[in-house]
Image (cartoon, rainbow, N blue to C red; front, side, top):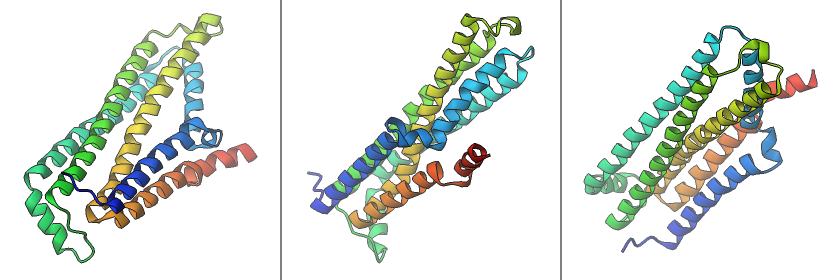
Length: 230
């Protein structure tokens, strides 16, 4: 049996609830529409409108390639992280001994340790699928950039619909990329569980605070507020 204690289960429930709650706040609520992610989604539509007016779209192709490269990097990092977590299964005894040597660590049983490692592996697998799908969507965006109507047709209904459709696919790619990154951030909070349920709850809280601040109170977000006041 895994043998997770009640404090472990409570800390895990808090972790899952924090992840789901933060995701809903950011993507499904009115408050989330003022986040940095939501504001950047709007600029994707503006980008596609500008693209229609350009005769030479080399810059747009370069921007799309940069987005693809960034997504590919994180997808590759996810695979490396998955390999690292799977390697932990082969060194369970050594890892438990290391935790036991820490003055503030809670010594887990073998079943508890392997259950925690399995959970971390699942998080990185989830992140990989998000990054991989985001990369695929950016491929679609690159194809659509190449298929964009010529500038002389930019004011036609078909061209405007094309720009809006491309922007939606680009926004969806960005949304999946953000979810993959969010998984990485929560994985950092998840590491606290290897030290015990209380550190797990504290690191989860710290991750949520950091992510919330970046979305709603960072210098980057305030730059948009200053622009609105002007």
